[in-house]
Figure 1 (tube, helix red, strand yellow):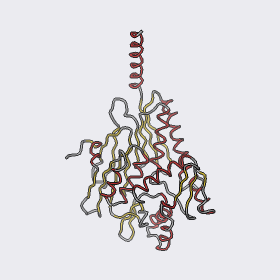
Figure 2 (cartoon, helix red, strand yellow; figure 1 turned 45 degrees about the vertical axis):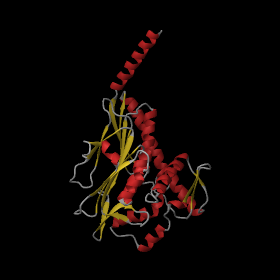
Figure 3 (cartoon, one colour; figure 1 turned 90 degrees about the vertical axis):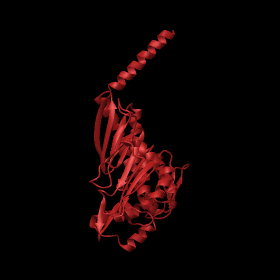
Figure 4 (tube, one colour; figure 1 turned 180 degrees about the vertical axis):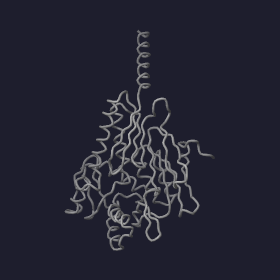
Length: 342
Protein backbone atom coordinates (compact mmCIF):
# COMPACT_ATOMS: atom_id res chain seq x y z
CA UNK A 1 0.00 0.00 0.00
CA UNK A 2 2.81 2.41 0.92
CA UNK A 3 4.59 1.55 -2.32
CA UNK A 4 1.44 2.39 -4.32
CA UNK A 5 0.97 5.68 -2.46
CA UNK A 6 4.61 6.58 -3.01
CA UNK A 7 4.28 5.83 -6.71
CA UNK A 8 1.13 7.94 -6.96
CA UNK A 9 2.88 10.78 -5.14
CA UNK A 10 5.81 10.64 -7.59
CA UNK A 11 3.45 10.55 -10.59
CA UNK A 12 1.42 13.44 -9.20
CA UNK A 13 4.52 15.45 -8.44
CA UNK A 14 5.91 14.80 -11.93
CA UNK A 15 2.62 15.81 -13.54
CA UNK A 16 2.48 19.02 -11.51
CA UNK A 17 6.08 19.80 -12.37
CA UNK A 18 5.42 19.11 -16.06
CA UNK A 19 2.35 21.39 -15.99
CA UNK A 20 4.47 24.09 -14.37
CA UNK A 21 7.18 23.74 -17.00
CA UNK A 22 4.75 23.87 -19.91
CA UNK A 23 3.08 27.08 -18.84
CA UNK A 24 3.51 29.74 -21.51
CA UNK A 25 3.81 33.51 -21.20
CA UNK A 26 0.86 35.56 -22.50
CA UNK A 27 0.41 39.32 -22.53
CA UNK A 28 -2.75 41.41 -22.82
CA UNK A 29 -3.48 45.14 -22.84
CA UNK A 30 -6.63 47.17 -22.30
CA UNK A 31 -7.52 50.77 -21.45
CA UNK A 32 -9.11 51.33 -18.04
CA UNK A 33 -9.18 54.21 -15.55
CA UNK A 34 -7.75 56.58 -18.13
CA UNK A 35 -4.57 54.58 -18.76
CA UNK A 36 -3.27 51.43 -20.41
CA UNK A 37 -3.29 48.29 -18.28
CA UNK A 38 -0.77 45.57 -19.11
CA UNK A 39 -1.31 42.03 -17.91
CA UNK A 40 1.36 39.33 -18.18
CA UNK A 41 0.44 35.82 -17.09
CA UNK A 42 1.50 32.22 -17.48
CA UNK A 43 -1.09 29.64 -18.50
CA UNK A 44 -1.15 26.13 -20.01
CA UNK A 45 -2.65 27.40 -23.27
CA UNK A 46 -3.94 30.50 -25.05
CA UNK A 47 -7.59 29.75 -24.31
CA UNK A 48 -6.98 29.56 -20.54
CA UNK A 49 -4.93 32.76 -20.68
CA UNK A 50 -7.61 34.65 -22.61
CA UNK A 51 -10.34 33.45 -20.26
CA UNK A 52 -8.40 34.55 -17.19
CA UNK A 53 -7.35 37.92 -18.61
CA UNK A 54 -10.89 38.78 -19.74
CA UNK A 55 -12.26 38.01 -16.29
CA UNK A 56 -9.52 40.06 -14.61
CA UNK A 57 -10.03 43.04 -16.90
CA UNK A 58 -13.79 42.78 -16.35
CA UNK A 59 -13.15 43.08 -12.61
CA UNK A 60 -11.09 46.25 -13.22
CA UNK A 61 -13.92 47.68 -15.34
CA UNK A 62 -16.41 46.82 -12.60
CA UNK A 63 -14.35 48.68 -10.01
CA UNK A 64 -13.96 51.66 -12.34
CA UNK A 65 -17.74 51.98 -12.33
CA UNK A 66 -17.57 52.00 -8.53
CA UNK A 67 -14.68 54.45 -7.99
CA UNK A 68 -14.55 56.81 -10.98
CA UNK A 69 -14.77 60.53 -10.32
CA UNK A 70 -15.05 61.23 -14.06
CA UNK A 71 -18.13 59.13 -14.79
CA UNK A 72 -21.30 60.79 -13.39
CA UNK A 73 -22.95 57.35 -13.35
CA UNK A 74 -20.32 55.73 -11.13
CA UNK A 75 -21.36 54.64 -7.68
CA UNK A 76 -19.01 57.18 -6.13
CA UNK A 77 -20.41 60.13 -8.08
CA UNK A 78 -24.00 59.07 -7.47
CA UNK A 79 -23.26 58.98 -3.74
CA UNK A 80 -21.70 62.47 -3.85
CA UNK A 81 -24.70 63.85 -5.73
CA UNK A 82 -27.09 62.28 -3.22
CA UNK A 83 -25.15 63.98 -0.47
CA UNK A 84 -25.49 67.34 -2.25
CA UNK A 85 -29.26 66.97 -1.99
CA UNK A 86 -29.27 65.74 1.64
CA UNK A 87 -25.92 66.53 3.31
CA UNK A 88 -24.90 64.16 6.07
CA UNK A 89 -27.61 61.59 5.41
CA UNK A 90 -26.23 58.01 5.40
CA UNK A 91 -26.04 56.51 1.91
CA UNK A 92 -26.06 52.76 1.33
CA UNK A 93 -22.97 51.67 -0.59
CA UNK A 94 -21.58 48.45 -2.06
CA UNK A 95 -19.06 46.19 -0.36
CA UNK A 96 -16.40 47.30 -2.86
CA UNK A 97 -16.90 51.01 -2.19
CA UNK A 98 -16.98 50.44 1.55
CA UNK A 99 -13.75 48.44 1.37
CA UNK A 100 -11.76 51.01 -0.60
CA UNK A 101 -13.11 53.77 1.66
CA UNK A 102 -11.97 51.85 4.74
CA UNK A 103 -8.51 51.35 3.28
CA UNK A 104 -8.32 55.03 2.33
CA UNK A 105 -9.27 56.01 5.87
CA UNK A 106 -6.49 53.80 7.27
CA UNK A 107 -3.81 55.62 5.26
CA UNK A 108 -5.37 59.05 5.95
CA UNK A 109 -5.22 58.46 9.70
CA UNK A 110 -1.68 57.05 9.73
CA UNK A 111 -0.41 59.98 7.64
CA UNK A 112 -2.41 62.65 9.49
CA UNK A 113 -4.16 63.64 6.28
CA UNK A 114 -1.18 63.73 3.90
CA UNK A 115 -3.21 61.18 1.96
CA UNK A 116 -6.85 62.31 1.81
CA UNK A 117 -9.45 61.19 -0.73
CA UNK A 118 -11.67 64.20 0.05
CA UNK A 119 -9.17 66.25 -2.01
CA UNK A 120 -11.52 66.03 -5.02
CA UNK A 121 -12.53 69.73 -5.16
CA UNK A 122 -8.86 70.78 -5.18
CA UNK A 123 -7.94 68.20 -7.82
CA UNK A 124 -10.71 69.54 -10.06
CA UNK A 125 -9.29 73.08 -9.81
CA UNK A 126 -5.76 71.91 -10.60
CA UNK A 127 -6.89 69.91 -13.61
CA UNK A 128 -8.11 73.18 -15.08
CA UNK A 129 -4.96 75.01 -13.93
CA UNK A 130 -2.70 72.56 -15.74
CA UNK A 131 -4.80 72.88 -18.88
CA UNK A 132 -4.85 76.70 -19.02
CA UNK A 133 -1.49 77.15 -17.24
CA UNK A 134 -2.90 79.56 -14.68
CA UNK A 135 -3.06 79.22 -10.89
CA UNK A 136 -6.53 78.58 -9.42
CA UNK A 137 -8.41 81.70 -8.32
CA UNK A 138 -7.69 82.40 -4.61
CA UNK A 139 -11.41 82.54 -3.78
CA UNK A 140 -12.11 79.24 -5.54
CA UNK A 141 -9.11 77.65 -3.85
CA UNK A 142 -10.31 78.74 -0.41
CA UNK A 143 -13.84 77.44 -1.07
CA UNK A 144 -12.45 74.09 -2.23
CA UNK A 145 -10.27 73.75 0.86
CA UNK A 146 -13.35 74.11 3.06
CA UNK A 147 -14.59 70.83 1.56
CA UNK A 148 -11.40 68.88 2.24
CA UNK A 149 -10.81 66.80 5.36
CA UNK A 150 -11.01 63.03 5.74
CA UNK A 151 -12.61 63.54 9.17
CA UNK A 152 -15.77 64.69 7.34
CA UNK A 153 -16.17 61.22 5.81
CA UNK A 154 -18.14 58.90 8.07
CA UNK A 155 -18.45 55.16 7.48
CA UNK A 156 -20.73 52.65 9.16
CA UNK A 157 -19.40 49.17 8.30
CA UNK A 158 -22.35 47.43 9.99
CA UNK A 159 -24.95 49.34 7.99
CA UNK A 160 -22.73 49.65 4.88
CA UNK A 161 -23.28 53.39 4.68
CA UNK A 162 -21.31 56.52 3.82
CA UNK A 163 -21.99 60.02 5.17
CA UNK A 164 -20.35 63.23 3.98
CA UNK A 165 -20.53 66.26 6.26
CA UNK A 166 -20.95 68.95 3.58
CA UNK A 167 -22.64 69.35 0.19
CA UNK A 168 -20.36 69.50 -2.86
CA UNK A 169 -17.75 67.29 -1.23
CA UNK A 170 -16.04 65.15 -3.86
CA UNK A 171 -13.93 62.05 -3.24
CA UNK A 172 -11.00 61.16 -5.47
CA UNK A 173 -9.52 57.64 -5.57
CA UNK A 174 -6.75 58.67 -7.98
CA UNK A 175 -4.17 57.93 -5.30
CA UNK A 176 -5.35 54.43 -4.42
CA UNK A 177 -7.78 53.19 -7.08
CA UNK A 178 -5.38 51.62 -9.56
CA UNK A 179 -3.53 49.72 -6.86
CA UNK A 180 -6.80 48.54 -5.35
CA UNK A 181 -8.10 47.34 -8.73
CA UNK A 182 -4.81 45.59 -9.50
CA UNK A 183 -5.13 43.60 -6.27
CA UNK A 184 -8.65 42.56 -7.26
CA UNK A 185 -7.56 41.59 -10.77
CA UNK A 186 -4.70 39.47 -9.42
CA UNK A 187 -7.14 37.65 -7.14
CA UNK A 188 -9.27 36.79 -10.17
CA UNK A 189 -6.23 35.41 -12.01
CA UNK A 190 -5.27 33.29 -9.00
CA UNK A 191 -8.78 31.83 -8.71
CA UNK A 192 -8.66 30.91 -12.39
CA UNK A 193 -5.38 29.05 -11.99
CA UNK A 194 -2.97 31.75 -13.15
CA UNK A 195 -1.09 32.86 -10.01
CA UNK A 196 2.09 33.65 -11.96
CA UNK A 197 1.08 37.10 -13.15
CA UNK A 198 2.09 40.74 -13.37
CA UNK A 199 -0.34 43.66 -13.64
CA UNK A 200 0.91 47.14 -14.56
CA UNK A 201 -1.16 50.32 -14.68
CA UNK A 202 0.73 53.56 -15.11
CA UNK A 203 3.15 53.80 -12.14
CA UNK A 204 1.63 50.85 -10.28
CA UNK A 205 2.83 47.25 -10.64
CA UNK A 206 1.42 44.27 -8.75
CA UNK A 207 2.84 40.76 -9.09
CA UNK A 208 1.86 37.28 -7.97
CA UNK A 209 3.98 34.12 -7.92
CA UNK A 210 7.29 34.16 -9.78
CA UNK A 211 7.37 33.14 -13.46
CA UNK A 212 8.39 29.56 -14.29
CA UNK A 213 12.10 28.87 -13.84
CA UNK A 214 12.64 32.23 -12.09
CA UNK A 215 12.74 33.25 -8.47
CA UNK A 216 11.05 36.64 -8.97
CA UNK A 217 9.63 39.17 -11.42
CA UNK A 218 12.13 41.66 -12.84
CA UNK A 219 10.59 45.12 -12.48
CA UNK A 220 12.05 48.40 -13.73
CA UNK A 221 11.21 51.72 -12.07
CA UNK A 222 11.89 55.16 -13.50
CA UNK A 223 14.35 57.62 -12.00
CA UNK A 224 13.69 61.23 -11.05
CA UNK A 225 15.22 62.62 -14.26
CA UNK A 226 15.36 61.28 -17.79
CA UNK A 227 19.18 61.24 -17.89
CA UNK A 228 19.48 58.83 -14.93
CA UNK A 229 19.32 55.05 -15.38
CA UNK A 230 16.21 53.16 -14.30
CA UNK A 231 16.43 50.98 -11.20
CA UNK A 232 15.87 47.22 -11.27
CA UNK A 233 13.83 45.34 -8.66
CA UNK A 234 12.97 41.70 -7.98
CA UNK A 235 9.46 41.12 -6.60
CA UNK A 236 7.21 38.18 -5.67
CA UNK A 237 3.65 38.53 -4.36
CA UNK A 238 4.13 42.24 -3.80
CA UNK A 239 3.42 45.64 -5.31
CA UNK A 240 5.49 48.65 -6.22
CA UNK A 241 4.25 52.14 -6.98
CA UNK A 242 6.19 55.16 -8.17
CA UNK A 243 4.90 58.73 -8.07
CA UNK A 244 6.75 61.69 -9.47
CA UNK A 245 6.48 64.75 -11.66
CA UNK A 246 8.83 63.67 -14.44
CA UNK A 247 5.99 63.50 -16.96
CA UNK A 248 3.05 65.09 -15.11
CA UNK A 249 3.67 68.72 -14.22
CA UNK A 250 2.96 72.26 -15.34
CA UNK A 251 5.02 75.43 -15.18
CA UNK A 252 3.14 78.57 -14.15
CA UNK A 253 4.90 81.93 -13.73
CA UNK A 254 8.27 80.19 -13.65
CA UNK A 255 7.24 77.69 -10.93
CA UNK A 256 6.99 73.98 -11.67
CA UNK A 257 3.89 72.37 -10.09
CA UNK A 258 3.35 68.61 -9.83
CA UNK A 259 0.06 66.90 -10.67
CA UNK A 260 -0.03 65.87 -7.00
CA UNK A 261 -1.89 68.25 -4.67
CA UNK A 262 -1.12 68.74 -0.99
CA UNK A 263 -4.52 68.36 0.78
CA UNK A 264 -3.48 70.78 3.53
CA UNK A 265 -2.18 73.68 1.40
CA UNK A 266 -4.42 73.12 -1.60
CA UNK A 267 -1.43 73.66 -3.90
CA UNK A 268 0.33 71.45 -6.41
CA UNK A 269 3.66 70.20 -5.08
CA UNK A 270 6.75 72.15 -6.13
CA UNK A 271 10.34 70.98 -6.50
CA UNK A 272 11.21 67.57 -7.89
CA UNK A 273 10.30 64.28 -6.22
CA UNK A 274 10.27 60.64 -7.15
CA UNK A 275 8.81 58.33 -4.51
CA UNK A 276 8.84 54.55 -4.80
CA UNK A 277 7.08 52.32 -2.29
CA UNK A 278 7.06 48.51 -2.12
CA UNK A 279 4.27 46.90 -0.10
CA UNK A 280 2.38 43.60 0.15
CA UNK A 281 -0.67 45.03 -1.64
CA UNK A 282 -1.26 47.40 -4.54
CA UNK A 283 -3.57 49.71 -2.62
CA UNK A 284 -0.92 50.18 0.08
CA UNK A 285 1.92 50.94 -2.34
CA UNK A 286 -0.29 53.25 -4.43
CA UNK A 287 -1.50 55.35 -1.48
CA UNK A 288 1.82 55.41 0.37
CA UNK A 289 3.68 56.93 -2.59
CA UNK A 290 1.38 59.95 -2.18
CA UNK A 291 2.32 60.10 1.51
CA UNK A 292 6.01 60.01 0.56
CA UNK A 293 5.49 62.77 -1.98
CA UNK A 294 3.52 65.12 0.27
CA UNK A 295 5.13 64.73 3.71
CA UNK A 296 8.56 65.85 4.87
CA UNK A 297 10.86 62.97 3.78
CA UNK A 298 11.88 61.59 7.17
CA UNK A 299 8.34 61.86 8.55
CA UNK A 300 7.06 60.02 5.48
CA UNK A 301 9.69 57.32 6.06
CA UNK A 302 8.42 56.83 9.62
CA UNK A 303 4.79 56.53 8.47
CA UNK A 304 5.63 54.08 5.71
CA UNK A 305 7.86 51.89 7.84
CA UNK A 306 5.05 51.63 10.40
CA UNK A 307 2.90 49.93 7.75
CA UNK A 308 3.68 46.16 7.90
CA UNK A 309 5.80 45.06 4.96
CA UNK A 310 6.13 48.52 3.40
CA UNK A 311 9.44 50.12 2.43
CA UNK A 312 10.38 53.18 0.39
CA UNK A 313 12.98 55.29 -1.36
CA UNK A 314 12.46 59.00 -1.99
CA UNK A 315 14.62 61.19 -4.21
CA UNK A 316 13.99 64.92 -3.89
CA UNK A 317 15.43 68.02 -5.57
CA UNK A 318 14.33 71.58 -4.89
CA UNK A 319 15.19 72.44 -8.50
CA UNK A 320 16.80 70.85 -11.56
CA UNK A 321 20.21 72.25 -10.53
CA UNK A 322 19.93 71.42 -6.82
CA UNK A 323 21.63 68.50 -5.11
CA UNK A 324 19.54 65.37 -4.62
CA UNK A 325 18.29 64.33 -1.21
CA UNK A 326 17.78 60.58 -0.88
CA UNK A 327 15.78 59.05 1.96
CA UNK A 328 15.61 55.26 1.92
CA UNK A 329 14.14 52.64 4.24
CA UNK A 330 16.56 49.97 5.41
CA UNK A 331 14.42 47.23 3.87
CA UNK A 332 14.41 48.66 0.35
CA UNK A 333 17.91 47.49 -0.59
CA UNK A 334 16.97 43.79 -0.57
CA UNK A 335 14.73 44.33 -3.60
CA UNK A 336 17.35 46.16 -5.66
CA UNK A 337 19.41 44.54 -8.41
CA UNK A 338 22.32 44.68 -7.98
CA UNK A 339 22.18 45.01 -4.18
CA UNK A 340 22.67 48.54 -2.91
CA UNK A 341 26.21 49.32 -1.78
CA UNK A 342 26.70 49.74 1.94
